[in-house]
Image (cartoon, rainbow, N blue to C red; front, top):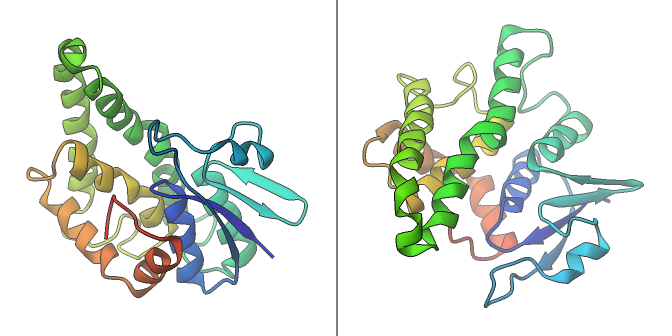
Length: 208
């Protein structure tokens, strides 16, 4: 059976949500961040050399990276659900959003978080980082003009993959200038499968 190695307050919450949306049976192994460093515990090194989350195991396979994990689950367990038909224009759009979430949109958020810990030392970088946040959050916000979901206005795994960006963006930067993203968060947080994933994965500081 598929096992999710779940770190509290991490991207692995998206994996639980996807599995709940699909109704897939899975095991969950919980890991807790170090209360002082906020880092993942060394036990995750026993699962993968990087010692990071998310990571899943499924038979002989051990898979890391949110996008790769979500793609694997949709292909092997989705039965055609939560992704457009391959070869269609919607599928190409879907792939773009899936890669964009971690490939581009998350970087300025991580920079915001890490430089925020530097105090005055990080101040010179803030204008550039904020400009990038406005650029990426604005891009996503505009994509939701007159629609609820990112791909062909149909809920898909791309929405699950993208969810982490406005969740962290709201905490680190605020979404007052991005009303479509605020509305997107309200929609996803109200989904039954999302609530089940929270109940199973434990407290999640980035979106309840």
